[in-house]
Amino acid sequence: ETGVTQTPRHLVMGMTNKKSLKCEQHLGHNAMYWYKQSAKKPLELMFVYNFKEQTENNSVPSRFSPECPNSSHLFLHLHTLQPEDSALYLCASSQEGLGDYNEQFFGPGTRLTVL
Amino acid sequence: GQNIDQPTEMTATEGAIVQINCTYQTSGFNGLFWYQQHAGEAPTFLSYNVLDGLEEKGRFSSFLSRSKGYSYLLLKELQMKDSASYLCAALDSNYQLIWGAGTKLIIKP
Image (cartoon, rainbow over all chains, first blue to last red; front, top):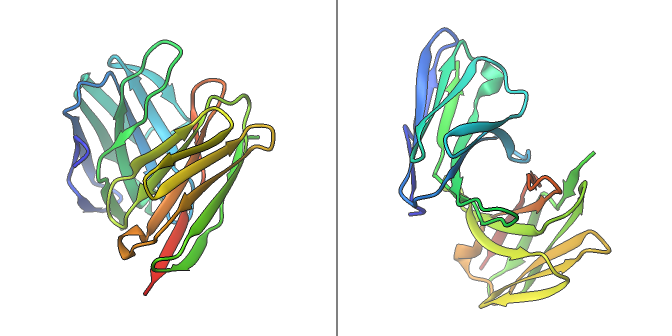
């Protein structure tokens, strides 16, 4: 257990469906992240939230919509996805400070399959 | 562009030693991380190097050469549970993590 939980662990959806992924961190961290992990590819950073403010959006398609209602919870809303969006979606959190960096703690991920 | 290179897959024998290499090219550098990821599980932090040299943590050690843009993870006395993917990630000048694709390590009895 890393202190970061994600639900659901597995999700199968059609291209016209709308679903949401949920992430919760119990570590008191101030930053949360969404990553996409595809087979044999580097982790792709999608979104970063620092103190609930989105600080990074790496050119992610609008069919992915993040939401961070507080520093412990992070959502990824999905709609009209494409089959190539099938991947493992990982959430992570860290404690960010000025000029330093601490390791990120990852959740177990949601394995998403888009049919 | 920014890039991290590490071997796709390695095989080693239980009880032996294995070295997983990682080379990086980033705009600025603020340290290098190694993570372990078992199949179907979350990546977990192994080590962080920002200065040249070797950092030892039990059976695992991590080395960094900033001048060469090179790091390695050394695993000693390999156990079957060490079968996993090992992810290398470099921190650039904007404190953004640049990730490698991971090295899948297979341990054979």
